[in-house]
Image (cartoon, rainbow, N blue to C red; front, side, top):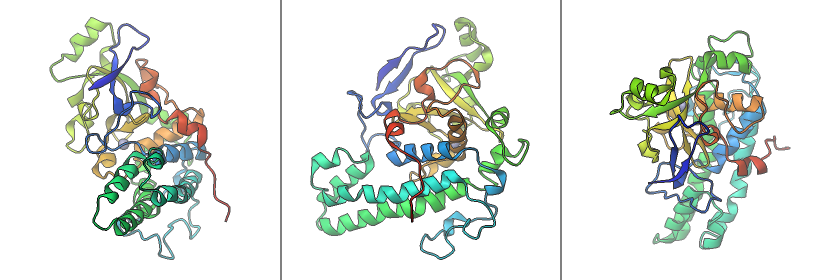
Length: 335
Ligand SMILES: [Zn+2]
């Protein structure tokens, strides 16, 4: 049920109605239920976005070629495909891997005090949910150990090797910069081939052209949800899966690869609606969100720019939680 109604600056635009799960954790009407709602934007996802924002544009020569993420083993001696020094490693990835390592240490307290509700209120929503379930198990100590291993595997194996390395391939992120000029595409070049477009997304019953005329909007910026790439794909979520009411003024990513995916306000940030991101709940970033991080980083802003189209509300452009942006510092651990 929508609980927050954000009025755009222009009267011609519809109200952006958001559910309680899209709000900041500090908002008094924030409410998120692991069993009921889509996966939250975990703190690590906000941090990794900030890491890639700080890392700057990704260069073509940094991207992997024939890497197979499904065989990744963090304990193998040649686990890091950049370690041979053939390719330079993206700085943003160095930051993100350091963030994952630090987060394992920072979360030890939740495993040590998993019976203490006061401690768990500060834990990420999914972890708190799992640790509460541990208490109900016949052998809590063993269940706790399995949960610890599962969480550590996410930070050590799934996030870096099976997700971030995979999107840092020529065939993934590389497809978004393929037609840009030069070895190191800067942000003006990136946003010529890929754009964040302010649009009103309407339902299947609505005649988009008639709606645009009635509201005085340019017809190219009003679109039916089922005309978007996300609306034609079974894995991609719909706006209603995330409790967002149509018509909705949202930012839509239009990419060099031809895809058109809206950014959904969720978990105090935005989530790309492409199938890659939603096919596996453990994925923390898709190539579109990586591009968004690079673009946001160029102006050192947690808001994505509207490259063209209507001026959507600020909330529809806020890519990272302000609370996490204020406390996270991208850095490489001293070893
Ligand atoms: Zn995506």
